[in-house]
Amino acid sequence: MTKKSLDSIVKRLKVEDPNSYEYNYVEVLNQNHSPNTFSNLEKAAKISPNNVELYESYITYYELTNNPIKKKQYCQKLYESNVFSEGLLEYNYNLLNSLENNSILFTYGNNDTYPALIQQEVKNIRKDIKILNLEFLKI
Image (cartoon, rainbow, N blue to C red; front, side, top):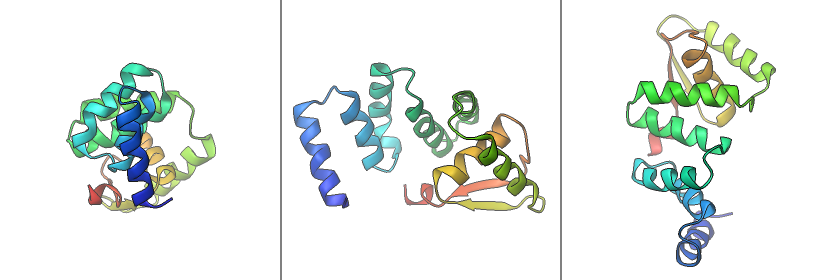
């Protein structure tokens, strides 16, 4: 799906169902988790407060707005949701522990970003490593 076609879907949802979970969450995704869409994220969470798929968006928002307390809180929620397998969490544990002190870990997707953040924020593993998601640089 192209960005242009997704834009048209979001515009249509905004007109036809602006108060829906779907519109508000898709708007956040369509704008690449821009801090400008935080009100949409909050609306989606109000409609579906226990929806696990929102946790990553909250973590992204709090990372971008430099709110470590809230980021840690949502990392804990994401960890408790059991979305990531033990194998994936172990892989990220090993990855963090294979790096030199004060390294930067460049990540790109969900499976290499959020499990590594969980290791740092929930399990206090290698907090000296800076995790830098390349997608966040586009925001």
